[in-house]
Amino acid sequence: MTKTILVTSAAGGTQGRTGRHVSEMLLERGVRVRALVRQIDERSDHLKSLGAEILVGDFLDVRSVEQAARGVASIYFAYPVQDGLADATAAMAFAARKHGVSRLVNLVMYQSSIDAPTPRMRQNYLSEQVFEWAGVGPLHLRATVFYENVARLVGASLPARGAIRLPLGNESTILPLISAEDVSRIAVGLLTGPERGAGTAYPVIGSVNSVGDIVAAFARVFDRDVHYEEVSDEQWRSEVLARGWNSHAVEHLSSLWKSLRAARLSAETARFAVTDAIEKIGGASPKTFEQFVRERQSELVAPKVAANASTSPEGRT
Image (cartoon, rainbow, N blue to C red; front, side):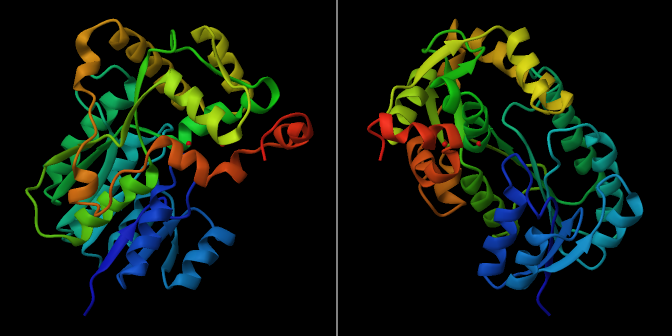
């Protein structure tokens, strides 16, 4: 009998949507997928059409998590950047242990330790410890900032102002980034590949870019003037909260920006380098940031950019 893999966050949200990518990649390989979603909608219908078993549940409802884990061999656990990680981890650890799950791929952030620079990164480290105590064969996939989220940040100001507005110091500040698809390929490799040592961590970076590199990539893809505007932490926080970003994510990112600014002033950035796990485990060369922007160009073109097409020579996690 073919083993079933439980994929959480399977419908995909506003961040990297790795759960959706993982589900689709597993289904393409003929793997049985139980997709845990929050509600039935066109996204879950799409996964069902590909062959996934759809289960509606809630990370924070231990009964629905326990039901989701029943009868599966492996789990992909990806909790969004919002409140509730501790409760969700405890519920999943309980359910996975109860049902004898032998492998759990746990998506966390690149820096995961008790001394990590953001509160979410420190919570991720505790999440790792809980899964290890539960004895469910955890493998920790430590991913850096998603291209998708950078594009989301850029898209908020680029159409109206032609600017990338972030509190990152000057254009020499370095950002280690990765495509959510590359993260998902690694997750699939860990879920379906040979047995690995429980508790092993896989830090992954797909590309290392300066703020200037990111500006230049958008300028080339859209063939328009794009520039960087440094804003204060307070101004950035106020703007994204006004756009509906949850306070947990904003607090994490605010701390991350401060950490990246500080790294620019030290030798700390030397530790940022593209990791070979993308190719060795994921089976593909890492996608560059410019490749990602080109592939998503139509999604990243907001109405005001399109409206300006007649006055500019241009032909967006």
